[in-house]
Length: 549
Image 1: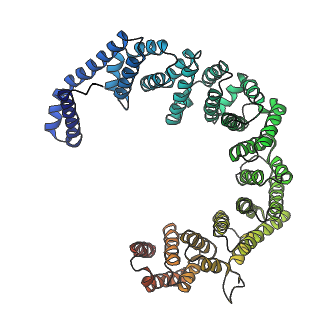
Image 2: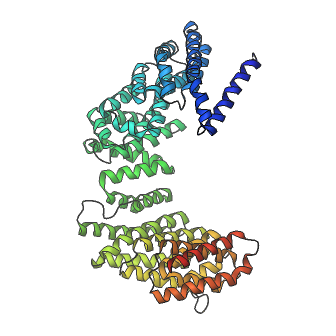
Image 3: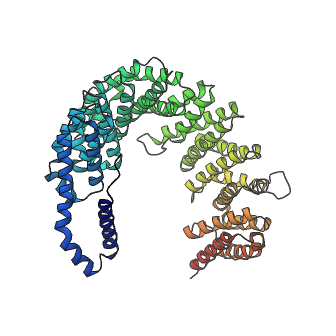
């Protein structure tokens, strides 16, 4: 390989140095005057460089190496370029040379990918769609175009929103239909369509273009998932179905075929979390939450149960068009079925973790409708189940943290409500744990996992949400020699004071805040060598003082 000429490199280093100097001195008049005089010369240098590269590419059109080097050079010039450089490139006739290069080497994927990146920088998504249509006969060309299109869509989503949905969808489906046996292409196309299907207009276009027939035929013709590509195809196919079932794609027209595919895929992939997640979401979109409850009751496979619980925890209560009484009935059914699943999988930590979040989020919805007696009673049972889970799994720090996080979510969502369900949770957290006179459940968890800083942080957060600042100060007083407890408590206090969410009476606040400062200072001995401890103390004090200025 020929070494670069030293004199040429020296000139490039000088230009780089000038660029750096101008960047940092552009506010100086002398720098601006000097560069203004250089502007025309700089444009000529860039223009000549591009023209000479294009000449080389045109004279060596049959040589893929010449084309690759030329395209890489152009990509480097155009990357992050603004109007001036783009204008120079376009005046030089780059597009025509790139098209000739891609036409002459339709199977050289690296070359095609870099050429498409240049066209994208110059002309955006419209140019990529034209290129995808032009390269359709070539599998490498189609692959390069789809990859570049997906990257562009993720970076510049506003361009996707401005594209006419029918032509956009048609060119993608046509390209995929041209290569029915190229599994990697089908996967890439489904990934792209799954991204784009976030737009309702595109879901409508997919239906109008008979996209369902193509998609279902592809999935029906895949008899097994023995290969990695087969599994990926199922994952992306089910994800695309789930996105399309969000509305607008008229999935109900093909509901029988969709149901058959989902049933087959879910049966074959019971241990694949991604397939289960999107498959169950698609089932829910088609048939509502009742289908998830049926899956929860019918399956003994813990992986399926976990993913079903995950889907249930994502239900958006109170945001649909359903009547209040009907939604309350559904929430009650969810709570009852989840508690039953917890009993059936009492030894599976992952199932219990997911179940805790479903109970907490559904119970938070129930606090807004406690006038409906059956829902209120079901939510009270759920609250008791969460407290019992904390009591029964005291040795599992990971599960305890998840359950407390779920309870914390519930307490945040139900703040300010006069709720018997919230009261049941708060009473359970402060009730005697049986491990010693006057020791609350939260104190017991804190004491048994004293060195677990993450868990301590969650304990203090929940203590503050359930019983205010005074509960955190009590924990600090009882654990003055524990650095983990003190730092977690102080961070919780900082969050509470900065958000000013303390709901106690003003007099009680004064007492609690004064006590917390005193305890923090008295506990400093346990934090010797821990600078962040005193940093957090200063934050607490600063917020404390701000509240009373």
